[in-house]
Image (cartoon, rainbow, N blue to C red; front, side):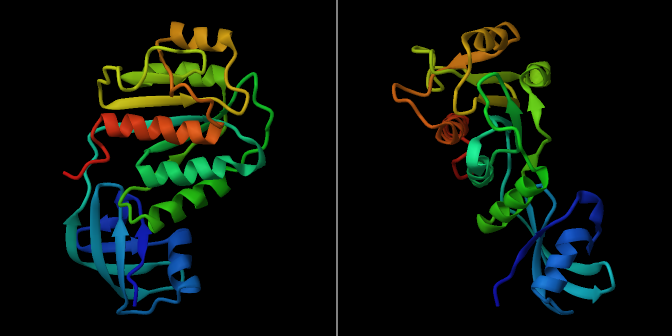
Amino acid sequence: MEIRRFFVDAVAIDGDRITLTGDEFLHMTKVLRYKVGYKAIVCANDGVENLCSIQEIAKDYAVLHIEERRVVDKKNVNITLYAGLLKNNKLDFVVQKSVELGVDRVVPFISDNTSETKFSKERAEKIALEAAKQCGSVYLSKVDDLKTFNQVLSDFNQYDQVLFAYEGEKTNSIKTSNLTGKNIALIVGSEGGFKPEEMLKAKDTGATIVTLGRRILRAETASIVLATLTLDKLGELDYE
């Protein structure tokens, strides 16, 4: 039987005991119909896989015993992707692939050229959870509420470096950028891209403007390309 993966907050772990509650508990017991004695892998966003066996199943929680701890991944840099809201649920693709790549947080936003207005954080969080389980990640990426472009700009001071993808940039690229710090933000617009004045605001606020190459990319492709190039430049796609 396949050993399934579940995610908990760090506070759910007490020594060799893990208490599983909420949606993950319901998925384990109501959907997968796990019983006492079944094995499971439980992760708490710390790079560790906890191989467990179920000791108790109550009405609204399950208690698991940790039989083995394995450190399987280590993150040296925290990456946040600010992705412009996209039409026809294309942001689903961005969230899914960002999680697979190892982006830590996805923040959707609207800017002057954004034509979509609807966003479901609950839907995006479910996609992130399923993507983390599918790719065998020990980290569960976060999804934020929808922000405005001005709110995105106000976040810049939280990061060591901000990379702003702009189709009008011809010279500066990820390859030529000097990436420093442990907390980096990536900014990619929606289908219409950014207006020049938005780019200038971002630059004045401290962003490094970068090109993604000579081809015009779809917005969802641009998000994944920027994340991949950045993670690769930082060595975050390599084996330890």
